[in-house]
Length: 242
Figure 1 (spheres, rainbow, N blue to C red):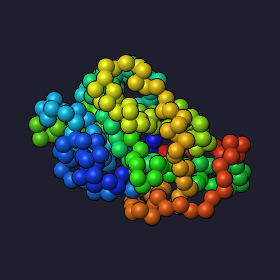
Figure 2: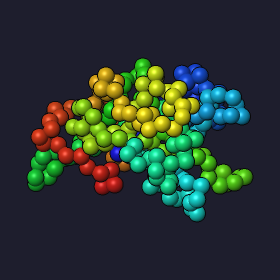
Figure 3: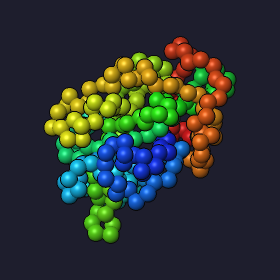
Figure 4: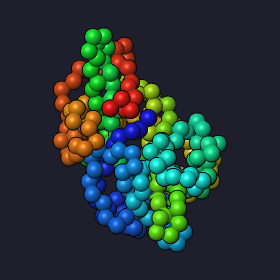
């Protein structure tokens, strides 16, 4: 899953990076993004004639939903079922987006039987390059109540990321951006992230303050000492435990 992430780049930086017109209204750094928070997305706008940078609420609210609160349960869309899901299929066909991030968090439970530890990790490509998640967007409501919402595609974890959690966001290298935004809704778009891209990720142990959504700031992504990850003694835990 992807249940918490960080995004600190400015709207000016993101609009330049993605060659997108800025319609975000301004962005504030958020080092502890949680479901229903406002986040930047890059999508194609017919009215703008190309890419636009927008601000969306994390947690896709399908058009048929009676209450936008359902979005809190729709932060992720599984790659295995997104093309057929009643909630996500239309957005996969017509409304795909890029979700830029500094990286994302997962928690790993250690092997201790008496008092297992829950070590948070931050997966990142570093300061020079964002992680770009494959995403979906839609608009819920009408007029003043219109709400732009989004979801992040997840897939089975590959390579070393399987030491952290059994799932991961679908990361898109730059050569896949155009096809994701504007290509036909071919299931080939959901191909796993290349191992060469995953290998560049840093799996960084970070402090426990990130477990509280009220905390924010760059210290949440600072590295802390931690035992090395081993497949024999770590188990993924669900973020709903926090």
